[in-house]
Length: 324
Length: 315
Image 1 (cartoon, one colour):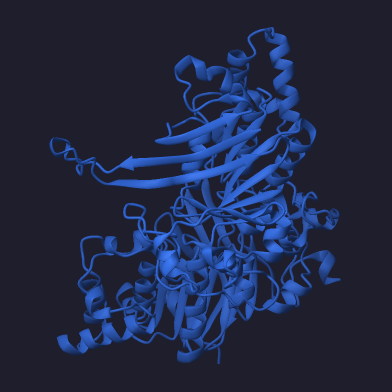
Image 2 (cartoon, chains in turn yellow, orange):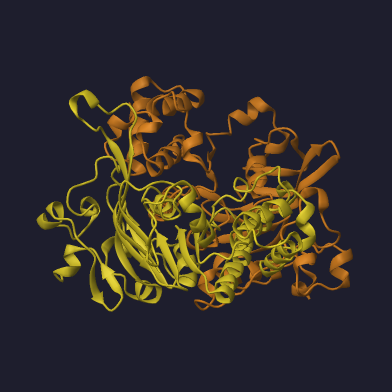
C-alpha cells in the first residue's frame, strides 16, 4: 500500500553555505536512502534511538515536510510531488497522531470543534447532524464520552487527550495512520489504555499503521513488522516475531539486550563509542565505528538490505558473509 | 542502624483553595549500601519525596510534619546552613534531565571544583586530581580534556556521567537519583544503570532511586516502594514484589506491561487515571479504579500492614 524508495531528507545547516564558491555547505542527513513498504492492514513499526531519523521519516510520509530525494507512493499514486491543494485528498487518506497530546490539540477549540473541523473539510457531503452523529460514533469507539464535546483540552488528562487526538485522526476514516511516539508521554497504566484503543481501531477499520517509537517492548506487542533505524538508514527489517527471536544485525542485538526487563538477569551488550553526528556520516556502513564485527569492507562499502529468511532483511556485510 | 529513616512524612502544597497533601504520611528506612526504588506514575509524589529529603521543595510545597533522620540527625528540623553541609557532601543528588542540571556557561572542571571548594578546603591541584579520578571512575574517556569542555560539547549519556561524578565527589553515603535514565536512550540507559550498580557495590553507597520504569527498578534495586496518590501502597523486596505483587495497583501496573501479554492481545489496563491533589477520593485513594473495592474501601483508608496498604490484600 505504502511504498517508499530511496527517501532522503537533508536539513542544511545555516551559515555553512558558500554559494559564491558553489559550495552547498553542511547538512544534517536525517534520513539517508530509506526503502520501505507497508502492506494494507499491518502495523509497521519504526524503532531507533534519538536522532536516527524516525520522526523525520514519519513527517516525510505524512507530507508535512518535503523530501530531498526519493519517491513515496501510496497505492499507485506518487505523493511526494504533490503540492498545495493537490494534497487535500491525501490528507483524508493519511492521518497523523503526534507524541505530545498537550501540544497537538488546539487549546482554544472545544473537543467538538476539534473533531468536527476535519470532518467538515474532508467529508463536506455530510449534513450538520450527520457529521455530528459520525463524530459521536468515533468518540465512543476510542473511549471518549460524547458528552465531553463541549469541554476544552485543558480539562482532560494526558491519556484522555491522546484519545481525543486519536479520535481526530480517525474521524475522516483514513487508510494510513502515522503515529509518532503516541504513548511515550503517558504513564504506564495509561499507555495500556491507549495501545488497546489503537489496536481496536486497527481491527475494526482495517487501518494500516506506521508506528514510530523508541520503546521496543511496545513494538514486540503491537507490531507486525519492525524496521530498525540507525543514523538515517534502515539496518534491519523483519516480522516482529522473527526480530525478537532472532535479530542478527549487531545494532539490533545491542538494542534488544538493553531493554530493562522486569524478569531475568540483565546483560546488556556494550557498544563502544557514541552515535556519530548525522552531519558527517561515516563512510561505508554507518554503524562500523561501533560494531564489534566491522572490517575493511564495512568501512568502505555501504551495505544494502538483503533477505536472509523470508521477510527478514538485514543490511550488514558481516551477516551476509556469515561472520556473525 | 538505618542510614536514612523517614517517619510519617507529610508534605503539603499551600494553594489558594487551601493546603493539599502531596505526601500523606510516608515512612521508610534505608540501610547503608542498600538500593531502594520508589515507583509510581506522574503525580504520585515520588519526586516530592526525593526533594523533601534534602528539603529542596520550593514554595508552595513544605514539610508539614514528620521526621527525616539521616545518620541520627533529623534533616527536617535543620537550618538552611546546616543542611548545606549535608547536601552534596553526605547525600548526593542526580536529577532527571542532564541538559538542565549542568550550568551551560561553566566548564565541567569549574562545576566540579565549585562543588569541592564549597565543602572542603583542599588545594587546587588536589581538587583537580580528585575530579579526574572521579571522571575516570564513571568511565569517561580522557578526563583531563573533559575538564576543559562545556556541557554542550558532551552527549546526553556523557553529561549524565558527569552528574554522577559530581554526586560522588565527596564520597557521600547516600545518592538520591530522580529518574536518572528517563531522558536517555535504551543503550545509554543500560550503561548508566550498570555504572550505578557497580558504584554502589564498590563504594558501599546507598541509593534511593525514583523512577516510573518497573524494568529499571527490577534490575537495579533490592527493595521497592510503590507510591499512589501520595501514599505508600506496597513495600517489599523487589524480586518478591515482581513475582507476587499484593496490592491491586501494583498488580495492575505489572500486568499493564506489554511484555506480560501475548503479542497482539489486548493489554490489561487499569481504568481511569490518578486523582489530582484537589479531588482525592475518600477512603483508599485507589478504590475508584480498583476491581476489588468494597464498601469499606470507600470509607476507611487502609494503613500499611506487612508491606501492603489494602483491605483486601491485608486480610
